[in-house]
Amino acid sequence: MSEYKVVSNSRLRFRGERSSKKKKKRKAEEAIEEGGQQDGWIFATSVEDLVGPIFIIFNNETLACLQSSDNDSSVTVHDISPTERLSTVEPDEVNCVFVGARVVGSNDRITLKTYKNKYLSADKFGVITAEREAIGPQEEWLPVIRDDGIAFQSVYDKFLSIDEIAGGGYKIRADVETVGFCETFRVKCQARFRKKQRVTKKEDRAVSEIEVEQIKKYQTWGGGRIKTSEGDANELRKARKEGKFSEALLDRRERVKADRYCK
Image 1 (cartoon, helix red, strand yellow):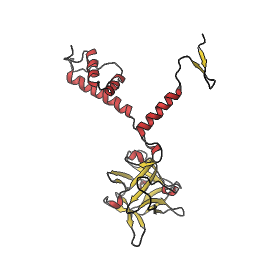
Image 2 (cartoon, rainbow, N blue to C red):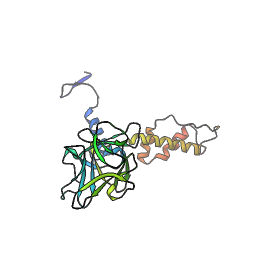
Image 3 (cartoon, helix red, strand yellow):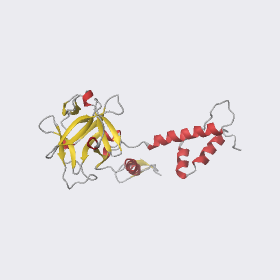
Image 4 (tube, one colour):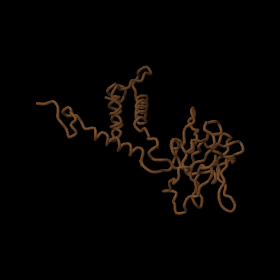
């Protein structure tokens, strides 16, 4: 009997070889489950969400957003249609989108670049511009995550702020020392750029830590040495999902005789 079979796309396969379509579909489903919605704009809730295209919104009586000027290096405030809602609003012009990136060597500071590849900058007087193509201290921002939004702190420890001008309109500056309503923005990021949570690695670390803690608690006398099971940690993760985590830990301790209560 032949060891091969021909499938519809004329590709030769070994008998019993699994189709890759199911595997790809499963990975896609896992990505959606971990990362949530994969299309559109969603609210940023962490510094990681600010890496990539972002939309910075000021939520007053009517919505407005930051935008870079088409004509010069200024950064202004763009009024959004009164019919738009915060939950569904998305940028309608490319100059309303900034691209966030981490500052090299920093875990919490970012830069904000316009569509013309110029960086959002604040000087010591709080003047906001977007004219530089290189990154210096004035182009660095520290996002402050709050329950009601995100504030942006400059290198001078002053916060990005929006002032409402008498007679209409807004002015943007960065010379405020405390965070209030005018210094708090709602920021949206593209869902497909949101960093996926690495659940598996966190669970691996968690089950191994729990196992060591349990062995320390129940171990027999061994001169202070900890003896752990050489079994695959996958069985612990599976037992956790099935609600049999404690029993699995006990079985592993029993196999290495590391529990004085095991018979």
